[in-house]
Length: 412
Ligand SMILES: NC(=O)c1ccc[n+]([C@@H]2O[C@H](COP(=O)([O-])OP(=O)(O)OC[C@H]3O[C@@H](n4cnc5c(N)ncnc54)[C@H](O)[C@@H]3O)[C@@H](O)[C@H]2O)c1
Ligand SMILES: [Zn+2]
Image 1: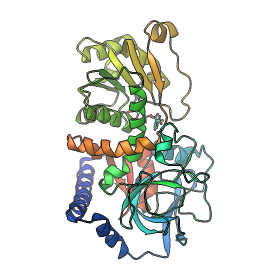
Image 2: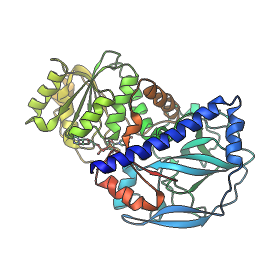
Image 3: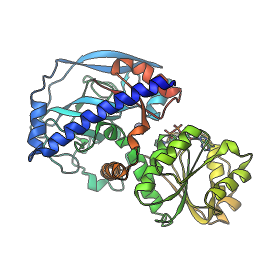
Image 4: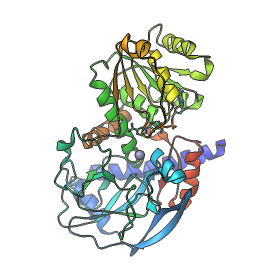
């Protein structure tokens, strides 16, 4: 990536953020922000058709045009503002492991309600919904629309339907890589009008880490003054660091082989970094981690890579009686070798796994994003590249090339 590109992107990002912030301060000045946002949406012309980016073949999206369906009493029509590209999208783009092609992808999306059915009044957290509000969706419960988020503290989203990973149907407007998305009754929706566009795009990946940190806390080992290793500084590890930092944990060592990512880990709250490429062999690397903590091993570790070798390594960074949260394998990445005596048994390591999130984690995520901004963590810089919808193929190729961190499709 050459420097001129970085500058252009930075300027575009600033312009978008400024527009967002202006929008927010205007609505904050209103005594009835709900009616203000309703008014902003009410004047909007809804077109007869919408563009949808359909993955029609491996590594190929077509921009298709579909009629916008009638909005039923329980439905909503949302004008899409932007959507992040996720690792799952990358798998679909490259190999279609879920057999969904043709599919309207995009599940890290957000936009503005432009039309809603008469029965739609509240979001899944009980907050009022109006035309003009900014929303995100979580899971869809076609078979049980009465489930509320508070019943779901223990139910993981894994296995539930989400927009952006649905088989194509007569409606077609099923993913967030599009101009409009059609939200049906029985979907979980959150009013996130108080978050700026980039924060809203980052909600879904951040929820993964809120869940992981909640799982880590269940061990009783993760504390205010813990020494914590975060291994892997892709978006997942970086968000993990930011969440730990907002919780007040100060002693965080990031481990990766990419210096640029390690440098960014410091901006997001890591107190030190270890580049594994500087060390030969796991004993030396564990020594490097120990040195970074001033002569101590970690109390707790988060494994945020999809590498089996990294899983094998991480036990060596943890002290006797310490804890580990393994969250790096959203999909099967193969087997890892460990020594049960040295790595787990004699060290009495407490291990938890973490996979996706619950609805409750979504609500916690909104608070995290606000806290991160309040303490000055540049969380929005996780979005390094943006593309308009008609350049979605380029966006996904940039994502596959691992040139940035989070790539987003931003609608004009
Ligand atoms: N648990 C869940 O629900 C969940 C959800 C989403 C993603 N994930 C998983 O999280 C993992 C990370 O996601 P991401 O988007 O950040 O991916 P990413 O590929 O952008 O980042 C992975 C990072 O790990 C680093 N890395 C690779 N091998 C390493 C090693 N041996 N030691 C230290 N660092 C190493 C890479 O340099 C890279 O920076 C993925 O494997 C993904 O499947 C899990
Ligand atoms: Zn995702």
